[in-house]
Image (cartoon, rainbow, N blue to C red; front, top):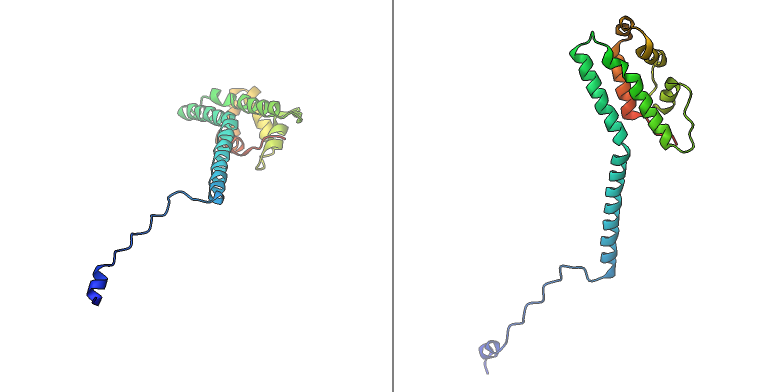
Length: 161
């Protein structure tokens, strides 16, 4: 028999099986489960943080409405008069959630205790003037700065332990 006849009688080898798309070892399954649990924990934490900061979003939305009402008519100070009550409601809510923290006696002390950034020293007197002073004195309080400080406090304050 010649070499060409011997080569003609050979059969072609079948191609190997395609590798499986799913991992065959338990280590990969464990890794997939851990990644899935980490993802679920991350989503749950984001949801919980979003839910816990609902009061902050509502207070900022109310502050936006107050600011917009004041900007439409800067001589009209009635929207500014509700600023101390907004801050007081947030402080009462925060200290109501904290089981061990007792609320301070004044709003200014509570705001400074919860502030992440230092507040101006005259903030308490300015808030008291907003609540009780006659209208002609309120325009001298620099409402722009007061609104800016209130927004900064609402965005950055920390929750008492």
